[in-house]
Length: 433
Image (cartoon, rainbow, N blue to C red; front, side):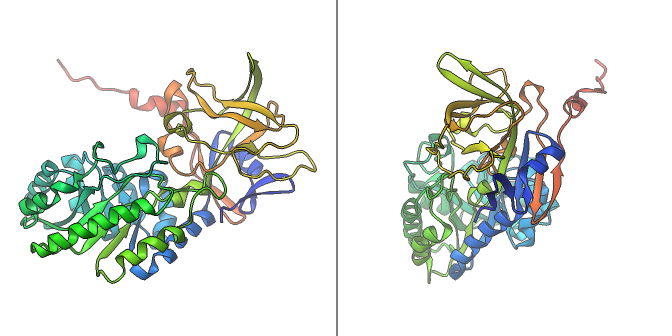
């Protein structure tokens, strides 16, 4: 249930017209639906209820403090990958015991920060990291908990090569054939209680089958570790559940759970799930205004005020987002959210931004009704990896973020200004030489 729909030719987010928000805050702008965020969170909660998991929302997918507060209020924990994300999770009221810290390059400062906060779990990705983690925990006089991130050599062929993290060739995790030796070396450490396994095989994963393979390998390893005397009691199956970029193109949380829950039922393991995209992706749109329409050879370009600096997924991952006008001519039918949707009179266009790069586009070969300067377009499925990956390249201030709750909306991050961009460069003190 994604609460963006057309009513009488206008796009609405819950009970607020998109054009009303754009008129008030300008464009480009990110708009999020609180109801959609909570719907997808609760769908995962219901689907896996039999296993009583700890759901740790992946902060990197959409990190705004107000969104995190909303999810923390619903009972979510948080999956963080940096000290900055940890600070956000704590500032949003996240319960430290329900925070998991992953990532191959945790710095000493970040580890020390997380130890002091009393987080629930570190996901460890190498022998060298474990040794450093133990050293820092010992220096702090604390005993901490960790899970070994396995690389199970499993992947979904539909996953982009840049987001497939479960193959041996990636930088993430420890190869599964080294895991027994890892636990023999570190499983009885005095400072770090190593009693879990973590797997994260990439994102988006479009079926349960890669999880079934990875969990099956993990359970076999757990049996061997337990037989060797290691008390393994936790399994973190990561995230990566796909989002519905095209209607009907990806499964529901219940479809994943249907195959995963029977594997883990009765095992007595603590379970952690780290969803991100499936919660946030379709909870957000990027609103943008048409600046110009032009031809170049045989191509027609719709030039808008959003750009690769606002949404880099199309350039970086080949991500495809449905794009359509937010206000339609009288009598027009609401669009079907499919990439191949082509209403009568549609024209093939490339939707591009104004950044000085040939690779700056939001969508290519899109069939759009005729548009002109000033028209408002919506880029759908932009809640995940949208604003969080935005940049200020070309000195373009970043867009505002807006949260809609029923018939009310509020700015949850103001639009940046040029002064914001230049402030860190002003009043620099130069040390004496």
